[in-house]
Length: 158
Image (cartoon, rainbow, N blue to C red; front, side, top):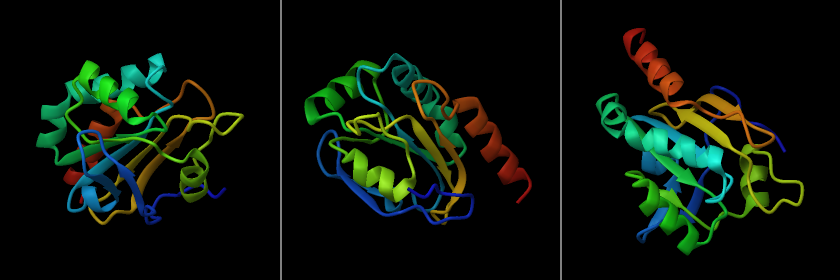
């Protein structure tokens, strides 16, 4: 299970999306900075807090040219209820195959491979990995303020 390093191309992933259509990565994030959040499931309080923080910062992220997507192994109903409850303004993919996503990205899975551990990526406008944050358990994840600060830095030092 190889991890993705800075400068690597993000692999092509496609999942059904809450509300219809498909989440296609990295294509859906092309042209600007992107954030990809793998969350453990609707039941995870740490994931809920992370997703809610990114949702609350939607205006800031848009102003910085950052698009966000999230995905998990949750089924359609669970993912849809989570997106509604947290008022997520970004696309949410559901029904991920934890083993396939882990094989493509290096994400950790639960001991029984039923779900993905929290994993976050910041992608550049070219779809290459700028930052990868891998968690092997419930805590340790991409933080909104770090993402915003990092993109601000990149834009001022380009």
